[in-house]
Length: 187
Ligand code: IDP
Ligand code: MG
Image (cartoon, rainbow, N blue to C red; front, side, top):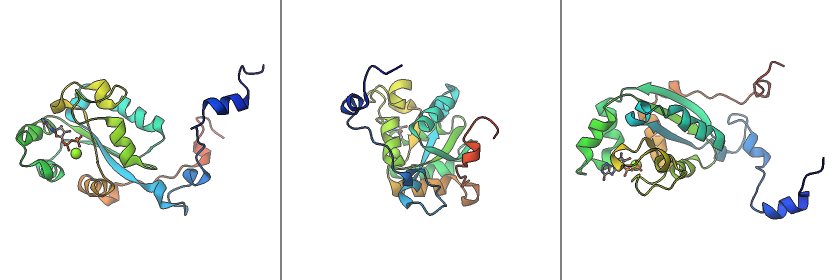
């Protein structure tokens, strides 16, 4: 049966739709452009774990098209938290922040893909949950700045620093997308 809208009408309705060029589909280790390999650190904070939001968050990043490169659950050591939040050490909320981040396990993840640092900041939303837009993770799942569910690096340099802080390089998995595995069924 023919669709209600023809191709040209659809094109007019979706002028900004872009098909990613083939470089986007290249494997990181197959000689593709380095801009496909940007990485960022995302961490579900203890309230995110308690509220069973790990799956929801992973699903958002996967559906957006990003690739999960590494993930682990851990009780964050205070030494790592102190380094992670070194820029905030003079803030009045710093002691409470460390207690909050130590109050239970976190799930640290490394996500990879084009523009992932900036995109993940947009996906998590404003630091202050009361300002976070609906549709963002903080805007959908949290109501207060001191329980804002999730962390994401805020610059490419910051991401590199944070990934090195939270993961040994030997832990990072460079898995390639195998066409034979992209189906849910055996070949
Ligand atoms: P970000 O997480 O959006 O990058 P930062 O300014 O780097 O925001 O702050 C780190 C974390 O410190 C926030 O996610 C939040 O958990 C906490 N925080 C920031 N500002 C406040 C505040 O005014 N009161 C309580 N906690 C805060
Ligand atoms: Mg920050």
